[in-house]
Picture 1 (spheres, rainbow, N blue to C red):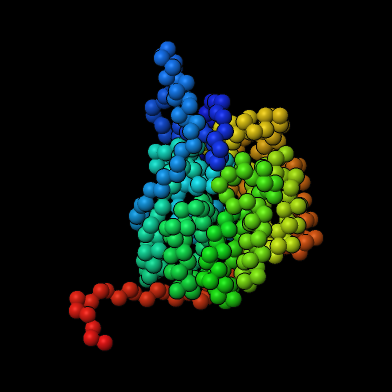
Picture 2: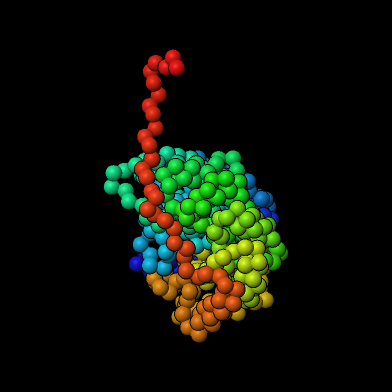
Length: 372
């Protein structure tokens, strides 16, 4: 396992309305470093104004060779994942997937939420993968890294295409999202749920609308997500809630309240993880703290280091999702007690893998149309 990169020097960066971060932080593979200076002609002030103008989202359509990603982490209870998009417009500052934009030579900061890679041939590549003679059905999750129902999905319908293939093949799967956009696909999900082939998890880190606007600025409002739980549950779709990540002294005090409200809306299961700060997420998060919570930033980071054995991030398996020490134990006990009191299951819902059937080959277009 690779060691964590040293944190970047924190810079002051005013907040951008509708964005999780305004910082186009250089990624860890950068070989060129840039430093701004004032040449006496006012260009530095002009550049600062331009940087603070809200950048539009750019959708970059891309064809991919593969769409199934394997999982080798014992901390995650699924074997395969599908992420129809790279980058996420929701703009969650704490997103552990931000560093993956570094592999695209893009910033894990502002680029991650403004330059979205859409895998437009995802359904086609999934059909090919499931058709392979050696493929055996495994536990599959959609949206484990970036949200499969972010705003671009309304137009591109990539996630819906993926679900249509899974439905045709009777392949069990789960979905995790913080978007009400999943309600569009209830017509596909409800019949699968009746046969034990699907479950959904809705992520609600906070019920505070003001906090949500700075934690996850372009995600569905928390109250609207509770209605999504209601509608999914009413359609017979097993739905759980993820209260993740728990950030000390920010959203952590809401843990029990979120569980109660989600249960009241129809959630039947729950899970929770603590804040992770891998790679570039660490300086991005700390800059966000200084911008929005300067009064408690030092206290938050002190607790994070306590959770991580003195470090600001611990990438080790079995430690990275829950932390260690007394405070991690207290969080785990709070979650377990609240879940038990509400009757929320904390183990992953088992889905039926036995119904899988390989997709039928698509008929090649005929050179001569039939008369009938």
